[in-house]
Amino acid sequence: MLRMENVSKSYTHRGRMVKALDSATLHIPAGDFVSLVGPSGSGKSTLLLMLGGMLSPSEGRVLLESSSVYDLSPSDRAKMRREKVGFVFQTFNLVPYLSALENVQVPLFLAKMEEKAQKDRATALLERVGLADRLDHKPGELSVGQQQRVALARMLANEPAIILADEPTGNLDPETSQQIISFLEEFHAEGKTIVMVTHDPHAAKRAKRTLRLQSGTITCQQADQGRQKLL
Amino acid sequence: MRLRTLVLREIFERKSQLLTSFLAILLGITVIVSIKNISYYSEKAVALEMDSLGANVLVLPKSSTLQDYYAADMQGETIPEEYVTQLAMSDLAGLDNLSPKLSMPIELQGKGFTLTGILPKSEFQAKAAWSGAGVFSRPIGCGASVGMMGSEDKKTLARKRVIETLEDNEVLVGADVATKLALKETDSLEVLGKTFSVTAVLPQTGTVDDARIFAHLHVVQDLSKKGPVINAIEVIGCCQEISKGLVEKINRLLPDAKVVTITQIADAQIKINRMMSNLSLMFLVIIIFVGGASIANYMYANVYERRREIGTLMALGASSGLVLRIFMLKALILGVAGGVGGYAIGTVLAVILGPKLAGVIVLPMPMLALLAVGVSVVLALAASYFPARRAARLDPCATFQEV
Image 1 (cartoon, rainbow over the protein chains, first blue to last red):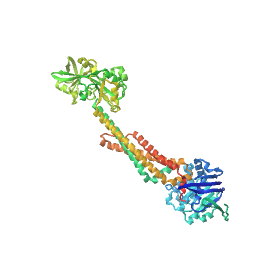
Image 2: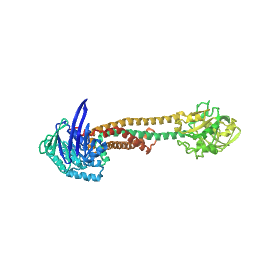
Image 3: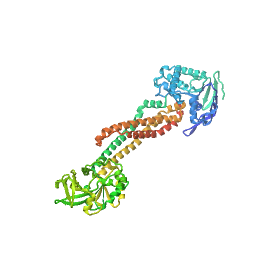
Image 4: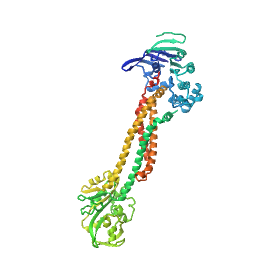
């Protein structure tokens, strides 16, 4: 489903060349649940952004369902994100002036869905994450856990095949983290492919397998049933 | 959810930030609308006032000087009567009326008066060629001569400088002449051996006209034995055309004559018009720079503040074009609101302040709404384009920078 072939990303910082990702090769089949772990600055987010068509590599190719993501035009790449990829952010990134319902409606609006259908679908999604009584609340009027659940509902709006979660439990207490991970497991059980960046070892263990990054290099892959060094 | 909802929600959520830009554009448009509205009615009022003064351009012999407007035809020098034909047949715009004159001193009952020959308008109209191409077949500008056209009251000569008809045996007498010679309407008067009937006693004007006896031009030409000549042509010229160079155009048409305008009157009009026009232009420049800079500054700050939101929208699948549209729609709303608000407030101010500042009654001008909204929208869109383009080109990775 998702493939990276010798992908490198480098940029210049104050005259010095910095390598954020170094010759990463990776295959994530459909229905996989992968956690990406590693110290800060190891390239986890860079890798996630590249998989989501948000950051072009300096070298190599990123393929989604056999089409090279960065050979697509910017508008086709936006369409690909809209239809196939769902993002979950550490800081939720909800639009502060829109209600929970309207936030979930945003991707549906981007997909040009009719307004009534948008409302029905957004309501159903918020009901699914237990926020049926918070439809008209703005993000500032919700707890952080509730905000992340709104973000999950928004991510599900266009039924993406791939979920890219960037520290989805980073700002949450253990109980709420548990709740969010359970939702991700539920989505995985429904057949979605999930790539999750996390610092939380408990959350990482809930994935089917774990990739470790160190200084821009994928150093090992650990299966959920044990640890196995691949690279 | 629609694009409009997304934009309006953001505007109302952060309205205090938008307020400065909105006020800048609102105030600018308000001032422009007020000035334009007041100046329009002020110009109209001055034009009507000018019209009531009578002729405002004189065509004189080359060597004569304009010492006294009302006595300009009494210097003895002459020009051919043919000049009247040339003016009447010309295509010059702004010639509302022509009044050729020939004057000669006369003595009646031991008292000195002036016999002045004038050409009634019926003489012009009698000539088919003239009425086909002449000044009287053209639309009348500045509101001049309206009311005189159908008037049969010969006393209008005192104010309008032109009369409708005048027979060969008819004279009009000035107020002083009537008093000194004890004349009244229908009396007979003998001048240089010819008997005339007094058809009207003109009202007092306080000028040399009060000592004049007006007869038909061709009769006076015969009595003076000078042939087809005249001393002056009084022209009622449209004020706007005078300011656009009517005098120079007549000068080119009649190079052997001297063309002068009642400069102090025309200048006052021109100065008022120019001042209003300059003020309006000045505010337009101010609004373009201050309003434009304010909007651009606000939009750049707004883009910077919303970069995470923009990144999120892009991550959710928004294209660059949609992001551009979000900001341009916001600018459009700002422009329309500023234009409509500026027109409304500017019109109310003009109606209230017009009578106090310019001494004229000012009425709302719907046409100014188009100008107000047009200027406001174009300005808001132009000032917002580059910030909007920056937003559309924003690196969506900014969304993830906290990690």
